[in-house]
Amino acid sequence: MSDAGVTGTRGPGKPRLVIAQFKHETNTFSPVPTPLERFARAGSQPLTGDAVREEFRGTGSAIGAMIDLAEEAGAEIILPVAADAAPSGPVAREAYNWIARRICDAVRMGCDALLLDLHGAMVSEDHEDGEGELLRRIRELAPLLPIGVALDMHANVSAAMARYATVIAGYQTYPHVDMAETGLRAARPILAGLGTPAPVLSWGRVPMLPHVMRQSSLDSPNRAIQARCRAIEAEGALAASVFVGFPHADVACAGMSAVVVDSSSPQRAAAWRNELLAMCWQARHDFVYLPQPLAISMETAREAARSHAAKSHSASGPVVLLDHYDNCASGGSMDTTTVLEALLAAGLEQAAAFAIFDPEAVGQMMAAGVGAELVVDLGGKTAMPSIGLAGKPLQLKGRVRTLTEGHYRLRGPMARGLRASLGPSALFTVGGVDIAVISRHVEPFDLNTLVALGIDPASLRFLMLKSRVHWRAGLGDLAAAVIECAGTGVCTSDYSALAFSRVRRPIFPLDPDTPYELPGE
Image (cartoon, rainbow, N blue to C red; front, side, top):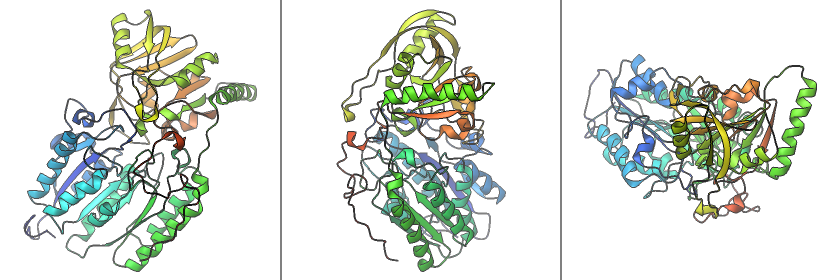
């Protein structure tokens, strides 16, 4: 059961498990910094010890499911750290080492297995493969330790990650409504296999950078690919995962990959892996997204609202405008104003916009108070040198409608039950548009995110969201129509605006004639 020489020999008693979380999706083009404080749910440091158990037990998270499973098994549980930061630029050196050290120190003290809730697309100031480096450090301490890893579907899975992990399982849904299930898929084979030979892990990748706007598992082609992953598990695999990858990371391992874990057969694992890789490659052209001009999007939104009103005798949800170039859940600054400015210029009323990240403007509104009228320079505080853009604030005159400290709990289905916070926040009304102004980077994937500010989406004609796909988890059923708006930001779907220099080449669609052959066993 134990890795002799590091974890000791624990005998037939209950297993000792280290369970930890270290999650970050790094947009290497993002100007948003990632210090240690960004990994904290409150205060200046991530949660540790019993606070982790209290925060995550019984929630729809991978680490919560791991804790629940370990408790059911009667295991002794060590919880060195739970660190999850909103996507942004490379992780600060001090933050990476602080979190990694806590996990390694827990392993060094002795355990029978390690369960990790990771993202899979972390880049630090020193390491472009953050998860691979973490696992390498752990393997130096415990060469034989069983390690189960839960990853996001947007993981850029590297050879190092596949080499050092015992089991890898990735989300099979985007929006990610199966976080807890993925935690169980990563943990169960580890707990069931303690004291037995390690399973076989087969990894491979295709030279593809799929556009995020074409990655949803609710749509083709990813819907069929993820369904096949579930079918392979039903046929006997311990875990089968296809990772669409995170393309806004200029690193060598960026791109699409597949991992299959089998109890004992390398041949069977490799065959399943190759089947999944072939599905990905055959669908490569369907993973390409072509944006439309913003002016056309605004007119389309207006026409969609008219058409919906003509067909419906009662309000039944808004036309959703997606400001997908500035999605904070992909590392966007969340303060670009291009789409908001277009919405205001188009005169779209009975509308709300979520959200502009601008703590400075929130402070002005807090000082003025509810009901006050004032002029603010909203948003545009962040320069984006990687894409050659400066910030562009909007000078707006409006009224403070709502003020809040921004605390709430996620309704789900995504990350159900977790505490969340917008930070001090305001609803600022300009003409017929309520603009959410927030102090923390939060993507609107949960109905309670809007409710916390007093926004009722069902009563709106138009709802602007800084999101790509996740909004569909909690708000998708409310939309009368969806209009994708090409604004500005480091989450651009126009790859020509991104200066890729480290990603492996050739790679599709950057290189349209990229060749590919399936790997061997």
